[in-house]
Image 1 (tube, rainbow, N blue to C red):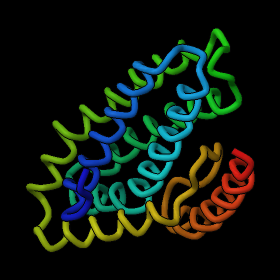
Image 2 (cartoon, helix red, strand yellow):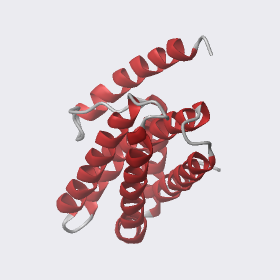
Image 3 (spheres, one colour):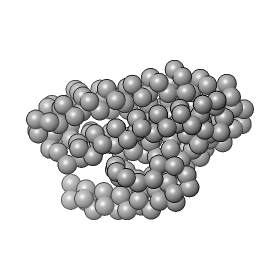
Length: 185
């Protein structure tokens, strides 16, 4: 799928990619290494997406939307629930009886969050921001995703400026760990 454009296009493309990963996971043999690998890929995409939203989207929501603080806080709480599920999934084998249950919970949480963003938050943001601002945010989100962590880090800051300072370092550590963990495969 093509990334680029304004923040709404960028994040909506991410949403479709996540939908596709969930579908691939459902088609994979239960308990298989493929299912585990696809879930790892899903985790990477969700964490990078969440970090980028917390660094750039939600501060813009706070600045530009009436009741923006409440809206941003709700979205960040959604991310917290998703992150807890990802952390629970991270240490489980795909053959673990809880794996499929946690995956189903994760899909429910993510789909509700995406639906809310696309039908409410994005519509409001598009009405409140100039196209140039949305384009700038799209570029910032793409940059943030390149540097973001690739695994969930519970209890890390989710608001600027601390998240913008810590996420790139955690992202670098994650990518190095991931490289060495996968090196033998």
